[in-house]
Amino acid sequence: MADLHFELVTPEKQVLSEDVYMVVVPGSEGEMGIMAGHAPVMTTIKDNAELAVYRSAGATPEKIRVSGGFAEVGDNGLTVLAESAGE
Image (cartoon, helix red, strand yellow):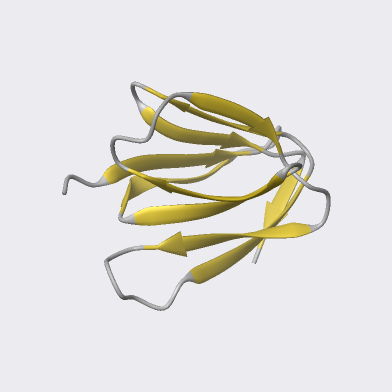
């Protein structure tokens, strides 16, 4: 399966922009696993939650703490616009 293009952006900077296997997004309605080919969707992000970024299948996820904002899956992949982000 093709990789998912993932971007994590805060008002201050672009935190991450790369191709990954999967990202688990802590949406306000629950967690969503996003992979390449996912249907278009938009959700708000829970405050003080963690994104889980899987760089390859079966890999240990990199956890990135985010607060507020939203996530959008579209033709260009997954974009997370967060109020703040840090490991």
